[in-house]
Image (tube, rainbow, N blue to C red; front, top):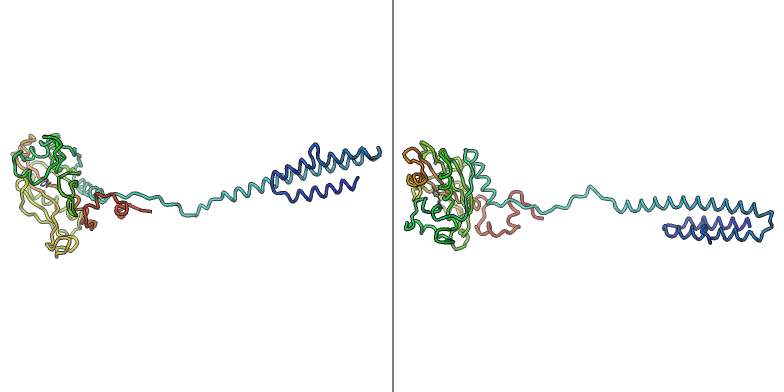
Length: 345
Ligand code: DAH
C-alpha cells in the first residue's frame, strides 16, 4: 500500500510538472483530488487492509493529499503568473516608435496673402471690415458715382441676381457702407471675394479676390496715398521695391491712378513675370471723388480721402510663382499642401 502511495505521488507530481494550461491543471485536480479521483480510489482500497494497518495508511494518504493540494496551489499560482507575463508581453507598447503622422491642412495661399495684408494695414492703424457678397446696385455702382447709363459699367461684366441685386464686382462697395456707418477719421481695409462674368483662363476667373482700402480725414492728400502704398509694397515685396503711379480713370476717384511695383522676380530689369517691362500692376487707387463723399453725408469741403483696390489673386500668384490662377480654386490638396503649414502624408 505504501508503495502504491509513493507511486501515485511520483506520477502525480511528474504529470503536474508537464502542465501548462489552466484547463489541464483543473483536469489534473479532478483526476487526483476529485470525489471520484485516484486518491479517493486509494482510500477505498484500504478496506482490504487489516484493521491495524488502516490508521497508518490513512495517515499516509492524507499526507499525500495535503502534499498534492499544496503542489496544486503552487502550480496554479505559477501558471497564473506565467500567463500574466505572456499577456503583458503581448501587450507591450514601444513608446519610442514614431507616431503616425496625420495629414494636416495648410492655409490657402490666398489666405496667407490676405492675412499678411491685414497685418500690414492694421499696423498702420487700419481696421479690417467685412461687406456682403450680394450687393445692391446702389452700393456696387450708383453710390460709387457709376449711374445706370455710365459707360464705366461696361468695364465690369456683372452677374445680376435681380434688377437691383447683384454679386459685387468690386470690394469698393464696402467704402460706401463704411462711410455711411462711421464718421471720419476713417481708416479701413475690406478683403473679400468679388465676381465678374469673365471667361476662365490662366489669368482670369469669374471669382477672384480684392482688398479695398479707404482713408478719410481732414487734410488727406495724394502724398498720404503714396506713402501708405509704398510702405505696403515694401513689406510685401521687400525693402528695395519701387512704386510708380500712372494716371488712370475710375469713376469714384479723382484723380485716379494705377499703381505698379518694380518686378520682384528681376528687380526691374525685365523678365517673363513682368513681361519684360520691369513693372507689375497691383492695384487701382485715387482720391475719393467729392461726389462720393457728399453722397455719404461727408462734406468734401472739410474732408478728403484716398481709396485703393488691390487684386489679391495676382499678389498670390506672383508671390508664390503660381503659373495659373485656376490652381487657386481647384482645391487640389497636393497643390495646397505646398504652402506654409501644409503637410501631405
Ligand atoms: N474697384 C476697382 C476695380 O475693381 C479697383 C479700385 C480702383 C478701387 C481705384 C479703388 C480705387 O478703391 O480708388 O477695378
